Image (cartoon, rainbow over the protein chains, first blue to last red):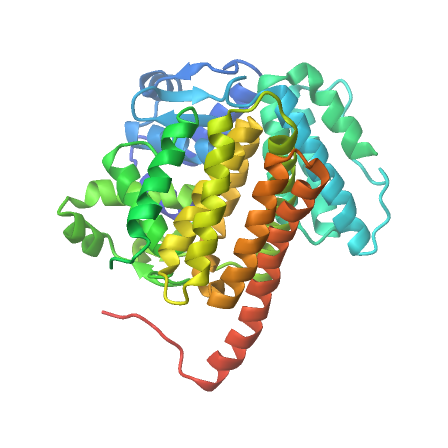
Amino acid sequence: MATDKSSAEKKQSANTRGQPGPLSVAADLRHLIVDGTYKAGARITERTVAERFDCTAASTREAFHLLEKQGAIIVSARRGARVIDHAQAPPSEIFLVWDRLRWLLGEELRRHGQAVNGEGAVTSSGASRSQRLIAAEANLNRLGALAHNKRLAEVMARIALHVMIVAPDRFEEIEASLAR
Amino acid sequence: MRSEFEPDVRAFFARAEALIGAVPGPPPTLPGHIAAWIADRIQFGDFKPRDSIRELTIADYFDVSRGPVREALRLLDRDGLVVLNGRKGAMVRDLSAEETDALFHIRAELFAAQAGLAASVTPRDPALISALGDGAKLLARIAAADNAPVGDYITVRRAISVLIASLSGANYMARLSAALEREVAVLWASVQNPDRRRRSAATWGGLCRAIENSRVGEAERLARDLVLDGLAEVQRRSETGEKQAASSPKRTRRR
């Protein structure tokens, strides 16, 4: 990410028209996906993005690359960029993986002598989808650090993002599982 | 380099690919092709952690412009195999001990879940089951030969994993698992030695039989063991590797 940033910043500084760079385009696009403006399976064309954010085609492509790295979209040469859909991420399977990794997180916490309970968990009832996802990510970060396994927390955050995209009505199951 | 196993390895790989049809492979674009080639070089140990990968060298090798190579390196950056470092170019990623530990534990859990599903789902394609058995036999034959190329062993092992993933019917899990496996690819070649290959091939054989005979618990246990044995070997290697590095000058590649 840091390396993307340096090359991204170069592109940004080269832009004299004050257009947004790839990082800010990616962040804004992600927001639209998480909040459901772009729903599961929605096609995002380079042109729409370039027009919506008044950014260059290069910034758009770089933003797609960043979002693909986060697992929010899939970019293919033939079909362009699409938000991940139910076929690629079936909710039943997402939760199967989530439960396995949640169990592993508990094991890792125990391995490092950490009590496994919901103490210190961030809650955000009634908040927007973006805010709820951010709260879940914060909880995962905290648990990942306690478990000495940040990577596991990252993978779980990616799965939480997938739930928010393909099954937002089931996101409370993620929240409940983290508060346990 | 040709090996006595090459025709069988190729045939088995082609058979596995034909059987799994539904699971998408790497995109057949030029950058995708170049990325797959570089990923293989990394997994087979030709490119080592921290080696720099030069756009121009690769472009010359494929006789293409730098554009597709740059795109290939971007794909590999996305997959965590290389690190793009601005003007310094691309470098084969080096995993920290903590990250290695984490990745293997996650993979162990996912692979156990896949193996468990592969052993329990019904109905199953009998062609996949029979290919799995033949793959285990081929792997054992390669492992029995001390001088077999690392690439042959890894190729068959990879095809078996793909067959198990396909049997499990869990594509989301398979993609996640494959992504994590690509990230640790850089460690594979270093843990390959005849002894370990023989032990590992025997466990793979047991896993394939457990799946064939629907022994779910055993399949899960063996799958988890296979991944965690790999971790133990990587950790053992890096300990001895550090001792060697301390007594010999650091290997670097410069222009």
